[in-house]
Length: 275
Image (cartoon, rainbow, N blue to C red):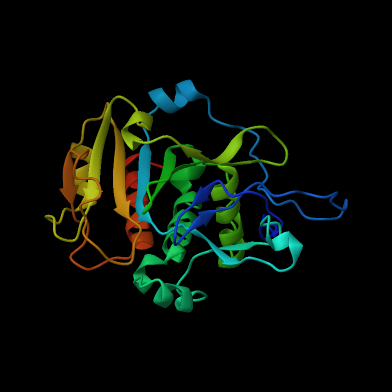
């Protein structure tokens, strides 16, 4: 189910910085009965916390993700003084090249489309539909986001952007037919949210190349597997060096983050006999 864009009406900001601002609380007026919902529909079979801890699964952490809400307009008139007409957008290299140039930032710093592609690949996978996948997003600014396996990410980038801006403002998104949070900002570090028995891997083009069909079965069968994937356009693959057990490459060729996620999921599905 697709989502509509984030509302434009806002109040006082919850985060201020020279380049980025998280959206403050919007003031919602009465919504017509025919208006579409802004949030995803919640699945009817959420996983219990005990099952998440005990069942072996794959955990994917998208590191250094470019998700940044930027104030693109202050509005006009008296409402501009209190920020009620301010407009915010998810900073991206297609729509905000002028902003990036003005602030002296690299265009590679604004690639939220990479996260969008990865989430579509991961959440559409049979592994996720089997209830054996958990995804986290760790942004370049240090925000840690937990993705509920049942959330339906918008297919279009425009609507995805609206959802992410709303999440960065509200810190959580609930389903329209339930109270469970489908997207939420959680406390760092990521290791606090991993099962006790977790083997942690980071993907890097500079590491030794392994064939996943041989590598994965050799890992401890009692452990879940956490894989850290860089969700940025370019940069060093040192984002998880302090917490991982091993760093590997899964191809002799440079892969996009989305392809790497899909390749890893397919290998796990084959090993765990998920069709």
